[in-house]
Structures are given as structure tokens and as C-alpha cells.
Length: 231
Image (cartoon, rainbow, N blue to C red; front, top):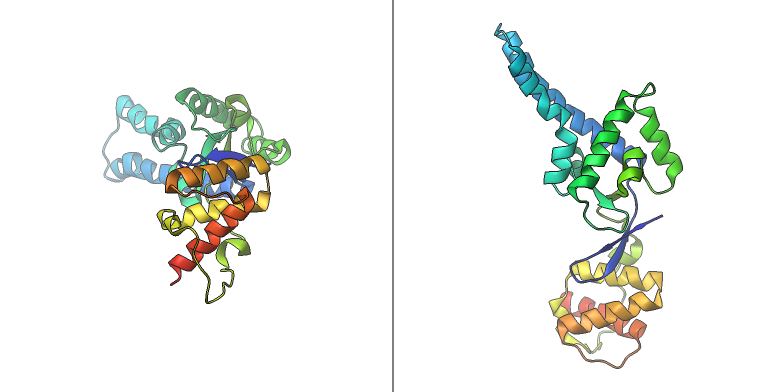
């Protein structure tokens, strides 16, 4: 299963859901942040023999309780741990969740953590769901994806071009390496409708005019960009 996310260039890119290991490591990083907060707010005053009243204690624990909700809402679907692991919460259609979706995820996380089996429930749910979703994700219609798709040899190897290669579309210099990665990925997928939309969008952005078939046009764009950027 993959999640399609529309880029600023109006091109669809598929991202894979974050693995269980990624999500566990992200949670561990978040727990370190929470542990540090506990030491700062509660541990230091105790060490200095400063008495803590009920109000101060409750106030100190509020950021712990709301950490997941506030961090994901304010940091565009990410907590500190998710930033460290390069993963993010998105809707299943790739769009950005609204506050209601984050709230549902947060409420279900509390219920999952409070259950008899604790953290085992979300791990099992993510493993068997097929869409990388725990109970909170299922309720909110969200999942967690890797922001950097796995890089293949096609993304990093430069195809040899003849020394007398002639650039057909000089305006491809307006594009970026990231754009080229997207085009390569779309060429590998081979979806004719996406090829059409991608070719049309590149022509619109760069002002290029061409009667080449869509696949041939995109392959030429890649070759031209490679030649221009490696000279």
C-alpha cells in the first residue's frame, strides 16, 4: 500500500507508510523529550527541596498529556520524534489532517495506552492493518508515511549521453533535481493518465512546446536536464 501526495507542482508522488520500527523509534525519541521535561519541571525542584503545590504539579503535567496532540497539530503532522525519523501524519489521500483528525488520534492513543495490553495493541493493529494504521489512524482516516521515498539506482545513476548530445528543451533548467526524481518515478510507474498530467504540467511551468509522445517527452526532459546540469 502507498499514499499518493500531490506536490506543489501538482504531481502525484507515492509514499510508503512508516514501518513499525520507525514509529517505535519516533515514540522513543518523544518519550526522551517528555522525560527531560519531567526532570526539568519536577525533578529539579525536588532536588532543591522545593515543595510543589497541586497547581504547579498539574500545570507541569499538562504538556505531557497534550504533547502528541499539540506537536502534531503545530508541526504539520510531526512530533520531535517523527521529525527525527523523517515521518509524518497525513490523511489517506495525502492531504494535511485537520485538528479533528489529530484530536481523534490523540484520544485513541490515550485509550490504547490505558488498555490492559498497553503498547501491544497499536503494534498489532499497524502490523495487520495493511495501511500502516493504528486504531487512532483508522478512526481519523490517517496514516504515517515516510517523507523520503526509498531511493533506487534509477534515481542516483546518470545515464550515459553521447558527447555530441543536442539539448532539445533548454528551458528544463527551470526544474530541480527533486522534479527529475518525480519524473523518473512516474516513468517507472507507467500510468498513462499520470504521464499526460505530468507532461502537461512541465510544459505549463517551463513554457516548452512539443509534439513528442508523453513518455518520449519526459525521457527527453530528463536527458536534457542531465546534460545541462553536468556540463
